[in-house]
Length: 231
Image (cartoon, rainbow, N blue to C red):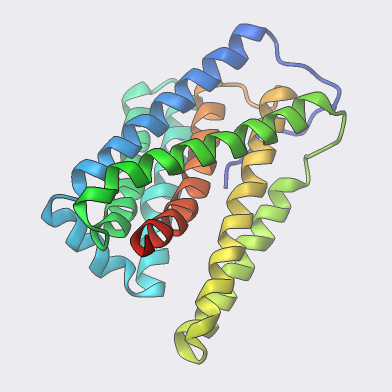
């Protein structure tokens, strides 16, 4: 989902360890804020609006692209031009998109399990992110093509989702798997981009990681809610 600042040598290292910590800190803060926003919005009429929008596959995709994708684009433009208000607006738009989607997902669950579900999802997502980071930082593998793999998965998810919408509803599960793998591949790429210093801005790298992590988070949340609802 993110665009790198350019492909460099895979043996390149971050300019400083503090940059890694800074990116991780910013990305983590954005994730925490977004998760809290999801929970808060799930108790408001905004969650019902989100449920209506995302109940239609094509409208949901469009809303996601405008908010999350558009937010990243604005954040990138703002960061590159040194316009922090524009970058902040982009981040806010992305937070709104994920908040809208997450609250719509939480809306179908009893209020009593929403917070526990978010907590469990956060732990699982954190573990997945940690494993991805270890693999990327502890190996010399070139993960530059994983952004392309994520695009392929997103495209596959869209095609299968369209088939599910028009002909075979059961395929929606397969579409979800494609989208999940797309975000996972993007997460690996974004971590590799941090390792190899692909971005000119720590903020933009952090936003890229945050978006990928939230994509993984959203899919795991749906699974966790299903499991908790059946207990």
